Image (cartoon, rainbow, N blue to C red):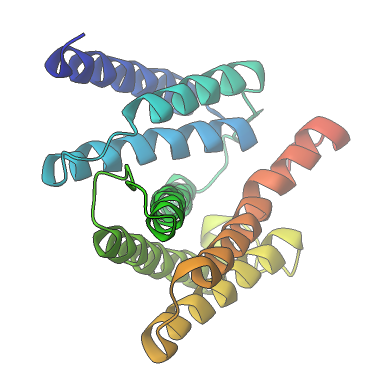
Length: 235
């Protein structure tokens, strides 16, 4: 299969993925939950990758991302989530969009960090890195995604704190979602501070990134998974 043909098939798969998401999120009634959140994240990661590959055509992760996207679609089909209340604020979808965009940006940061660690390991072994990009470029891209995700996460938390009653219909609550969100924010803040002030790089920085991403996943996806699957609750 030629490179152009493979790009075409990937684009078609991405568009179909987006159509499936739109049917679930904008249907009557609309549904959302942990699996649709993961599906939207996978779709956003693929979208960012498509744009990035125009600048760095050496990147070669499209088939891996396609496989993850297909798995996310199947998971969302099996677990479509709960019906969003008709009385929900019109600002709730906007807040959810910001939150899921955070997942997408940090997801891309994790993808680049994995490539960075793999390339660094192969370079230390005097082997070809097979990364398609110089190690310093991968590192720079990783932190750019972390910084962008951190800014969006900060905005999301600020909106929740100041306008919780408008968005959710209730004031700010100190629940598990809030605690994990703040833990992720603190972890990413430490990572960026360590990078800019102490020059953190390599495995140490990647480990902090992975920890922060796990906290972020537990904040919404993890809590929704427990409520939907184990507790059978809608909120």
